[in-house]
Amino acid sequence: MRHAKRRAKLSRTSSHRRCLFANMLKSLIYHEKIVTTVPKAKELRRFADQMVTLAKQNTLASRRRAVGDLMIRYNALTPKERRAAKDGNTSSYNIDRKVIEKLFDILGPRFQERNGGYTRITRHSEARVGDQGSVCSIEYLSA
Image (cartoon, rainbow, N blue to C red; front, side, top):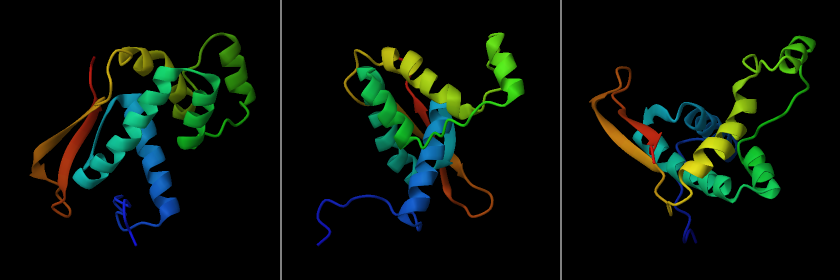
């Protein structure tokens, strides 16, 4: 029986779906607004709200869980990145290193007083050119 199994499969395997949502979630946290299809945005909203709830706790365990859920791998820095980081320049870092900082330093305190509903989905009137898919944007609220 499939009771309480309401998740959009999106014609993907479970591992592909997990990677898809991890990448979309990293982009959403970093840019705070992305454009995607409506079914993907509705499913992504669940994960985005969970990440903000983790960020509001701001404990070591919640940071480690966020790193695991976002599938962030901390590779060793190259010598060039190491020298730049020593000088205080972190602009050469990839997006993965910046996402956790932004999530816990900016988004968590922003929604500290709010109990849920951290995202907004806005449908666009025009359909996607290639396949006429319904397009929308998902974004974090400003406060």
